[in-house]
Length: 335
Image 1 (cartoon, rainbow, N blue to C red):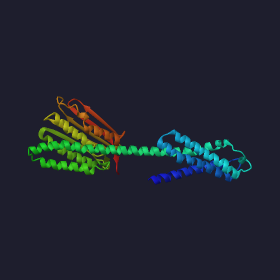
Image 2 (cartoon, rainbow, N blue to C red):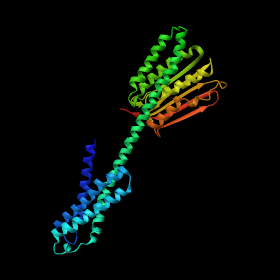
Image 3 (tube, one colour):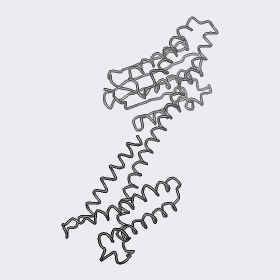
Image 4 (tube, helix red, strand yellow):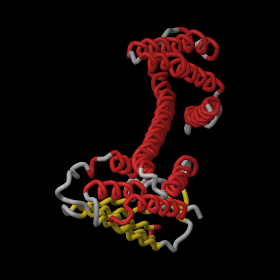
């Protein structure tokens, strides 16, 4: 990749040097071609090369302006000496070669500025590209970290419930283990991709709800309504499950009976819209101050910001007895 970048820079610089050279040799008053201009331009290119590729790298590396100033003076001096003591003796032995004229600097400086400007422009483009790649890598690493937090968070909550069933020797224990295994398999293996088919996420959401319903047994009711008639949509995995997990956790923690959880999911073809609502009741007298401060909600908010910037809305409504989240996302399509 580094070689490709170097090759592209050579092509870029060569093309721009050719354009500048054509402007330099063109004279509308004299249409004849002057050979000396080729060598004079090569001298300008050499001066720019010395400054751009020998001194500028040291300046960038050490961040000291002295390197740039010294390099500029040395490069300019080399150009003046070559023009005054070599080129003029070859092409103008009876005229310019007879005197050492420092006014030649007025001819070298503009060309040096133009050719050096190309280098600064290329470096600026490369720096911007490297910055974008770095931002992408940081974003990708952060997403992987956030996703990795979900598994232990989910596993911790469900192992506690499984432990209580095992202590009671409940006949539902094997079924809970099977459902838990299915959800974990999805989290560990199927969620490695950045996006998954919406149908897969819905299926695992239903498995998770089945698992969570076993925990509340006859102490409440879960209403699930799904209206998805637009195949071909894909979603970042493990977005919706976090809200459902939060609803079960806090509803159970605040009351021992009359648990009510309502979940609705529907899609619309317009803008590939996904509409998701998850609501749960809770006891106002219980300590639920941390409902909106858990790892799960903070996690999913950050993931939504990273994956769906300006493409989602998340509204949270807490009435004191009901806690509801309403999520709207414009999904992408894999068709």
